[in-house]
Length: 226
Image (cartoon, rainbow, N blue to C red; front, side):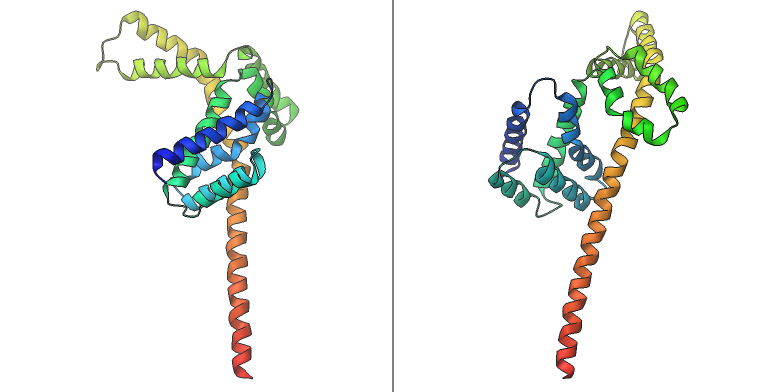
């Protein structure tokens, strides 16, 4: 199957699942796509682990019929093939899109378990207060402001921007750089256990395979000695 056809097929399946979800379930949708984000982070350093993450996503977290699951799993047979690369791209992007649709207040709920797991209540309080300042703002719109501001500031001297645009970009970075850094660190902490789980499951699977091969070899050796 060609790259274009794989992309169209996976995209269609994702949006079919997305449309089945009820309005107001954005946090649930985001959580269901976490292994897609993990696959996106792993694909360059370890396609094999990215494949494992995608298998977890397809088999346990997406509402797909058995035929679709079988088809998608078939595309993951070769971890270095285009099926794995395209699926990692599509589902990590889907995770990002779901996150962009939320407010920063929504994300404070999403990352609340991270705060509880890493910090004492009194340590987490300043972070919750910081979230409160931006709670009503849409995360996607904030990211667009940050990206544009970065483009303007990094382009100083190379592109011609007005003093007003440059000062505006500096104001945006001054306002949002703190919450952006906070969200990035919470995202890392949120996905870390899943990445660790994927790696552990992969090692477990490899050890089981080695054990089974040794068992067969040892059984064959015993039979030859008789």
